[in-house]
Image (cartoon, rainbow, N blue to C red):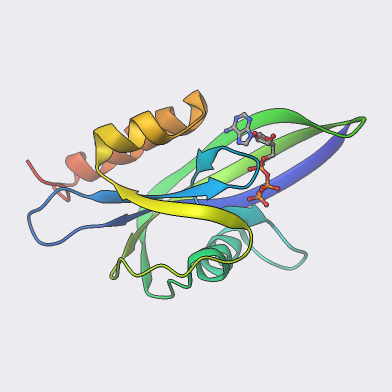
Amino acid sequence: MIDERSAGAVVFYMEDNSEPEYLLLHYSAGHWDFPKGNIETGENEKQTATREIQEETCITDVEFLDGFRMKVEYKYRHGKKLVRKEVVLYLARAHTRKVILSHEHIGFAWRKFDDAMQQLTYLNAKNLLSSAKKYLQQRSFAYR
Ligand code: ATP
């Protein structure tokens, strides 16, 4: 079994008093998920998340919301090997909706909560998005 660790973020964009839109990426393997990537030696999780957002979307202007840090765990097969993966996700506000994709993904979408829930492929990612929405609502961050 191989262990893999990634970090990333639920990135959202929100104009004053409007509903947040969440950034989803279309992975070439077929799934829709959040920006994320492998934690490299010497990096902490937030540094990885910042770098991955930048590499995958070209968004550099993000503000991490304190106190939100969640984990998603899954296993997948890579050839004959089984990979056990842990992904740490933060919550980050983007101040732009302009995305330039890298070669790693085949599409992106800014989606309001209900549509994002439909579009995300995996249940664990949907659960995480629900937690992010609750977090924003509790802090009166989001629309009412
Ligand atoms: P990273 O963005 O961390 O570099 P990656 O693009 O190499 O990741 P993953 O997105 O982890 O790869 O996808 C690897 C495999 O795991 C794919 O087959 C994918 O369908 C599956 N997978 C991805 N996310 C989940 C999840 N949340 N739950 C279960 N399986 C997942």
